[in-house]
Image (cartoon, rainbow, N blue to C red; front, side):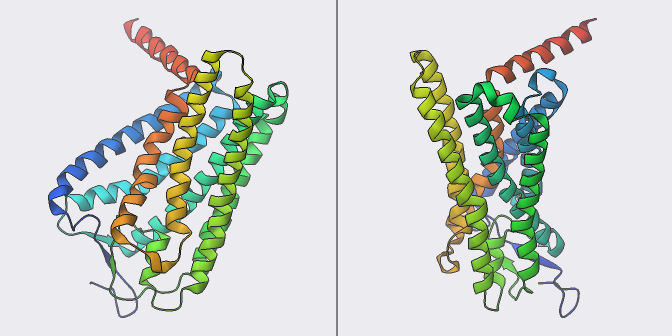
Length: 313
């Protein structure tokens, strides 16, 4: 492995799916397709939620943040993954690897907090509709978003920056991208403090938000049960179940990776688990939270018709 000098690492070998070379072309095609869909859907949400006054609501305010987060997360991870899938030289520079580690940890924590905030927003809208505009006014939403991003940074990036020691040889990463749990296995000193901080950070950014999501949806489901219309209950349950499915997959895979002892590391299983929250989840979020929503579909049709008419004239 090349190094700049005796103490500074230049690049790592990033194995990815190199153990299955016959599958790499197929995996490249699938991941590339998912990446394109992720970029397009999240950019559509971002543009429409900003441009359409009908979508200037608290729910779409937070969906804008989620779409932006998804774009950043997937762009941090997927392009290098795609490059390695079709390259014989499966390496990643030291600086890009460290950047991936910090950014993925920060954005992962931010998404956990943001999903909990969105669940609380839906709870207020369903269970306290008359007070909704007062509780979730624009200034409150801005403050909640600012606090969410700040807390996520403080509980993820700062502890890792303060405690990550130099990495030891061999500089081989048996994973699809660089992230904190994988780098723990490249530390040759005692990692007890790192594991403890990761567990504490996981409790704050995974367990606590997940509990808040479950509590919020518990109240929402209670309110849905009281709906007299059978069709209304069916649609509401369909929406809640899809939200909870995506949320459970995201939090569940995150807990599996970040809240377990170092000794339970399994490279092959971990690669598949990380694909869910790093590749698939950023694609599912816009589909589940926006494209199935009646207001968003109406906005999409309005803007499509307007653009079509403008071009015709």
